[in-house]
Amino acid sequence: MSLLENIRGPRDLKALAAEDLDELAEEIRHFLVHAVARTGGHLGPNLGVVELTIALHRIFDSPSDRILWDTGHQSYVHKLLTGRQDFSKLRSKGGLSGYPSREESEHDVIENSHASTVLGWADGLAKANQVLGHWNRHVVAVIGDGALTGGMAWEALNNIAAAKDRQLIIVVNDNERSYAPTIGGLADHLATLRTTDGYERFLARGKDAVQRLPLVGKPLYESLHGAKKGFKDAFAPQGMFEDLGLKYVGPIDGHDVAAVESALRRAKRFHGPVLVHCITQKGRGYKPALEDEADHFHTVGVMNSLTGEPLTPASGTSWTSVFGDEMVRIGAERPDVVALTAAMLHPVGLTGFAEKYPDRVWDVGIAEQHAAVSAAGLATGGLHPVFAVYATFLNRAFDQDMSILQVVPGLRIAAPRDAARLRAQLREAVDVSDAPTVVRFPKATVGEDIPAVDRVGGMDVLARTGEPDVLLVAVGTMAGTALEAAELLRARGTGCTVVDPRWVKPVDPGLPRLAAGYRMVAVVEDNSRTGGVGWSVAQALRDADVDLPVEAMGIPEQFLPHAKRGEVLADLGLTPAEIAGRISAVLARRKGGGAAAPAREENHA
Image (cartoon, rainbow, N blue to C red; front, side, top):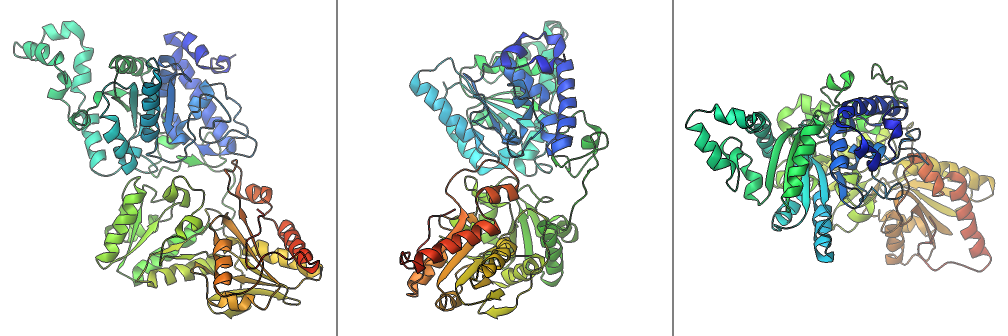
């Protein structure tokens, strides 16, 4: 058996001889490349933390010591070393999560899929240890240099540094990248630390090297080495961290297990907050990843493990590419349109815009809050900013965005159903000059365009079948599903009109008037039902004194297991057959005298 196959937990790892660790690291990288090539997943970040993760689990005692990962997508090696070596269904339904998962292991302390949050968790856990008297337990937070650009990280650092006696170790995994090269003042500071290696080289020389110093050098070493801040202050600009009140150890070669173990042992002896600065290489040991400057190997799909080439070519045009193409066109027509991204220039589709208009796009690092406020400043200054961001990254703790944004007065939300509507509604959004706008679309392949058969106010009518029984409101990409449900209802003798509101906030004033001619309203959305579009439609009907039941079908208030988008929707009953069945049930209750209360949401998923 290989070394990796014999490891069922940290205890097995600790039993290995030091001379076996390089071989183990090689086995892990080989495993990751071949396993992730079969399923897709985050490859580059995990190849970069192999030795670092080995050292962490040899020095600390998980789960008594809490090892936290920020972001969680760099935890694959951690999973392997804590007994989870079946990657056959990685990130698929019924398989391992792509992030830490409490359901999988007691070694997974927090469940996080975005950056800059781990230091807040670590601060709270360390405080809990202190209050409960767990003085022998350590909290270790691994955070990337990219994640350190997030405001939440610095808010936490400000609090962590205030406590001198908490067992909290921050390991900075510094690979100069997040999804893309890390930018900004902090990145420049870390770059200076990376290139100032005199301190570590000096200490490595040992006592004999001290004797060979010039006469002025020896007393300098002896006086500074024992001083409070240490000898490194004379050579390395790590003062930013120590000025905050954090002990600083590093920079350390993050691919030298012995060096990392030594640094972690030193950090444990401080008995207070310490920052260990490790230099790593994203994609380490895999030539295609190391040669890729665009970070395509940060996350990969199914691929040839030898070449890195995708095995399944893209099946169609993505929503992101449609957005990106239209942004380039708008940029040519509107010199006032500018763009912002939070360390996600390529994934959100702004690459082309940046190439054409480099002075009109800003990557603010992993700082979505700053991006939103900076966008407000740009707008106040006379420009029209477009902030491109994943919904989950904007909200941190929320799965969807339309519900939380419903509470913002004056804000408008568009939910395009196809590529043509995305292009049109993006242009409508940048034409709005008196309020913020949101254009929401999935990270998926765009289906074929769905033409409208009529227009009512600002809404598109997509189909009319039979008598005016049901007004089916289809939100965004649920339009195709709604049309299929309408056909099933038609076959049962139920008339149905399918409308796409296009802009879901505010509710089109024509919708209540239109709904008044039907027996019920149903809303289908791929969004949280609580506070969602169905909720706002029901409120609009109540405000207009329209006495109808509203069947709101969306995502229930629960955390969902990971799976592909289609699988999640199917599990939630957001399929044509389930939708048609629920609508038929409501109509049957009304016909039988058990009518629902006026304009209220039914409690179905």
